[in-house]
Image (cartoon, rainbow, N blue to C red; front, side):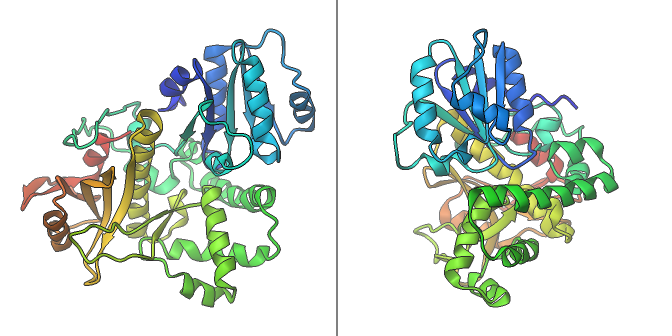
Length: 388
């Protein structure tokens, strides 16, 4: 598999004018992408904050005289990183291109202190998706009908079993995947969590991580989790925020439209590594959520659209898995089904009430495709060719 990533062209363009901040989960391919950027803009130098020699060199601003690009990995672990990178960029911006990467949400650290506004563009790197494996990007503009590419390449079973993270996806070996996943989680708690927060009750937060795969796909009751863990609501809320910052989970909120009696609370949570989920139905739903979130982040990070992913659920317990909006206006809704061809009444109901332009029922185990009652039933491997 060619590891050139879907964001490289946009990042290359932005580096000509500003710094680029690149965030994403551990081992999602940020370093490989950064090295590709050095190859395109070089010569350059890569510095890892966790390396003592690199740390000393970058704090002294000992940039190689021949360098044209500098990559700074995990720089957010330095408490004064914003002020420091602002100064370096302002001094060297006419000679050096700067790229900052990290496995925590760099946008979290943008508030307070000296403002970096106007000096950088922020990107979020996602795991591989079906289209990226096949080196395809399907350009879409908001509110356009979705266009579908050839579905000759069906990688969904591979993605479902091994995730979209490069190492297990390339290996496609069950034993290597298990070992990678075990080490990935261990390093998450041993390194990422420790570096971001001073967690006293590490055993409870590890128990929380064990419980979350079983809560995927359903409205998340923090009170139920709090009772299971016997911790305070404040502590649990804080831990969930940490999991989001470190790209362990992401949450979808219920969409509140004027035309429905919608829920106001209880988000759904999904995992960045969907292979932690044993149930194949919820694993497939999580994989679909990840593909759609990647698409939303891509349009937001590269084109500047305000595009968001939600779920739909009202007080009468009608529910649809996903809704994509632009400037809070519905664009398309998706109901993910493992199998079967009976159309979702909830999808039809919300489509009518919210005037959603496009409705899709996306089925993993089918080759059938038809349109009925404004709902497009479509195989998952074809539907996902509409994105990145």
